View 1 (tube, one colour):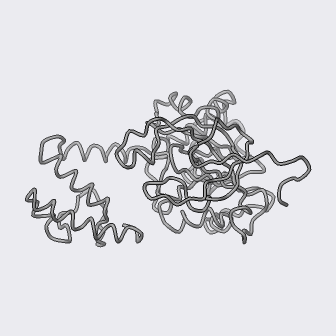
View 2 (cartoon, rainbow over the protein chains, first blue to last red):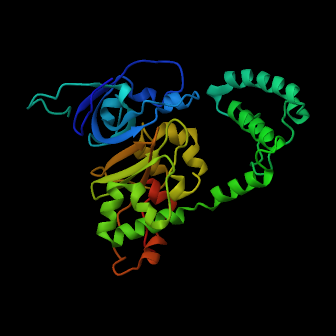
Length: 105
Length: 234
């Protein structure tokens, strides 16, 4: 569980494999991304999928991943991205990158 | 149903059997579920777990007079009446009215209410193509799609090939669909998995200066609003 995140915050998607109705795809689990925007709070679909009320509501975020971070053999450019909507309980905040380190080229 | 559900499907088949005995549904008793719904496309493959549950629920609700077959048919008719033309009107308004576009980008649900549309419980996130970015929509887990503005998704959008490949090799996929993106245009894939739905505002093509909304809407096709094509002026 995390506090409220903001656009630009770096996160890692939990690298876990729980059973049940999960809306976080495998290809981003364990990967680093950046919060693109906060989307508000929604009843948790992972609970709704099993007939529960999905409460309390969970914060939903759009997380942006660089394609080159997701796929080792990605052939497109470094600016290509995938945006995924991810619930807060999958997100682990990461420290901001030090100045000068920059993004992976 | 999909391969990953085959095990569950077998299990569910047994369940369906018991269910059929308990309620005397002879048609569900044989394994071919010999009474396919007349509104479903012909499909000779065995029904999957969820199809079985849907059929059983529908039959029970009708049998117990909770709903009628007529209501089910009307529900399909309503779904089928939702057409991509709705989304095209929205894009045309955004092209001609900067204030409307700003509202659309800020809060899609609020802005589409101008057209009498609502997203139900989902949140419409509108993304705009620019000279530098091409947005493309997918749902890798199933077939989440902005039905209120685009109608039902096309078969290719629901195909495993599109869903699996467009997040891994989007440039190759859109090229196969006829969109040859220059290397200096970034491709931004949006995987709509939970409560967000997406609508792409394409770039307004040159040669449409002075066009009214109806003329503009006519060149905004469904695939342009999914992001795998761009509007063409003939």
